[in-house]
Length: 134
Image (tube, rainbow, N blue to C red; front, top):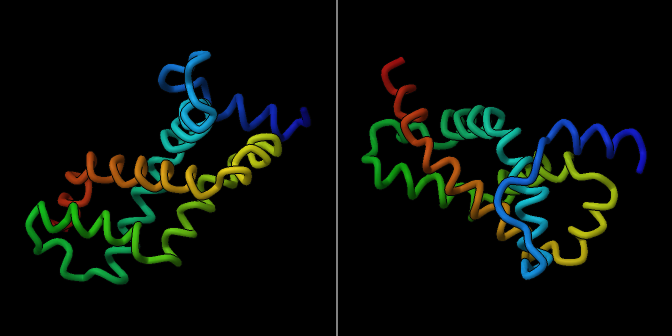
């Protein structure tokens, strides 16, 4: 393992969630790699989404909470350019070995990544509502 890989694993922190011998490889990857990266990058994701809504969703702050939640989901699911930028923020913190595992099932892992990221942003919706008073 090279210096970069060691640094990344130490920097990201420990596994979040349970990994057992019965866990699927995708579930193990999710808990050992994706969850720690999403937690580490949380502030960046929030800043990124705040920038996204200021550029593309100027009416965001005037919408109901339900519509705001829908905007979060739709922005990440349907705006391919934004989605790819978010994936890059995550994949950039993979070790080389983790990237090798990722490319074997990138489709399934991308779905997991984006689902977890959507839920993470939705659960912090109050951070996006605070901005409306500024």
